[in-house]
Amino acid sequence: MSHSILIPDEIADRVQLYRHFKKNTNIAIYGSFQQSRKGDLLTLRGYLRAYGYLNARILKIFVRD
Image 1 (cartoon, rainbow, N blue to C red):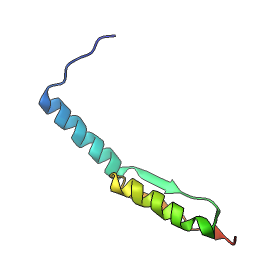
Image 2: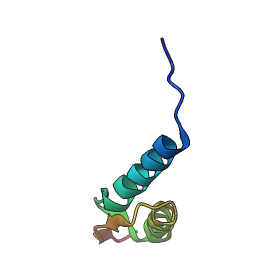
Image 3: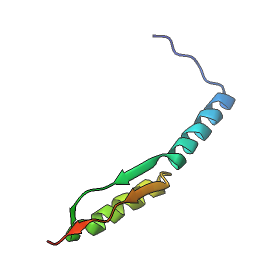
Image 4: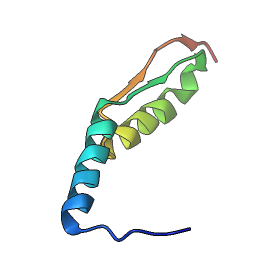
């Protein structure tokens, strides 16, 4: 397997492309969840958004515990 060496401009281009994909990738968290899990789901969404996945969404369908 051959490895090519990336020059700084190529690295910058790839980082920019990766950021673009993260910003524009839709992530949907959906299903029926117990109300007690709401905090965990919000934490997960916050984690994803903090790492650049700005379109992370939760469909809020909760069932009683």
